[in-house]
Image (cartoon, rainbow, N blue to C red; front, side, top):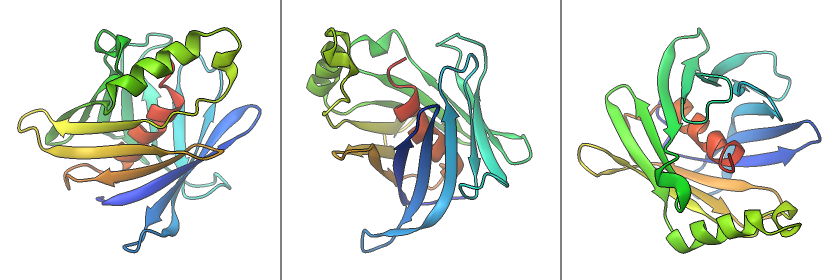
Length: 194
């Protein structure tokens, strides 16, 4: 299930973050909806389910934390039938100054980091300044994932400046299933400050 480019828009509500994953047409415009996801805030064991649309009647894939409140344990991505199709994990030691992630899918292992180390440091300072850290972050940030064995580009996630979070995602490696790329993208938004 390869999708070379898509975008993600976030809708923030009081009790949940909602995400729309939309195809990107060859001319750069938005195409049809690929999936809709909702993340409950303050959950002890993170789980996000992706549906065909915002009615949430037909689940199509999900990701779930391996352990409760263990930030280094990782997250598994499942298809609609509950079969594992990949996983990802934040590398907390490497992420002290510049966020780093591991991403894995059948036949593919990749490492991802924030593209700009200066923005990474500014984001961390911003989060710890009293009262200022509560203001939505004005910085854009980008993540690039590369194949661990050959260093080839696998996935790029670019946050665009807008009132609500919006991302443009490019999947350079055809081995990366859209569902794993989409789960990683939602995680970058939902879990990044953890």
